[in-house]
Image 1 (cartoon, helix red, strand yellow):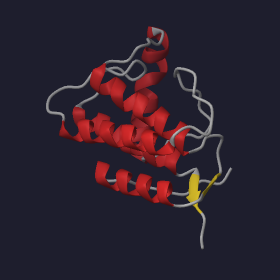
Image 2 (cartoon, helix red, strand yellow):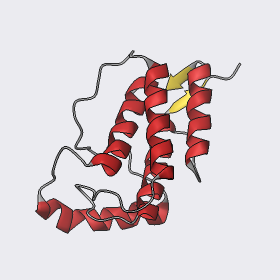
Image 3 (cartoon, rainbow, N blue to C red):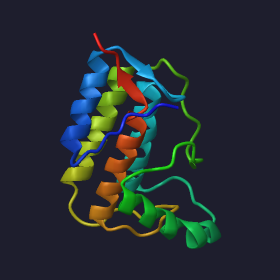
Image 4 (cartoon, rainbow, N blue to C red):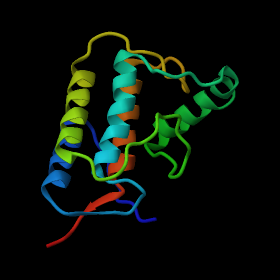
Length: 151
């Protein structure tokens, strides 16, 4: 599976990449299209802002959560193919413009938010800075599977 190496320092860089992907024809090197990718990313950002609608067994959180979080934040990378506790992903081919707008709004809310955010079901308490970094890494991970075609 081919994946572009992306790294984002702020939400504006993610939005610029989203707009670029929306404007061009892209190749998906993963299982999801832009619509599904944006739905997935927005779901988790909204969860950190509004609360997550699911729980992870505490034993998983205690045994693996903090270890995995430290590895992600230190390396700036996420492992491809790792399972995710998410609602069912929508079918491919949805409204990409609406999905990009939803993710853009979630990013704007995240970076404008002052104060604490909700705990992660898997990682537990994160500082606002850790949450923002984790979301930027998560966006880079998934958007890296979508490659704009060269003209």
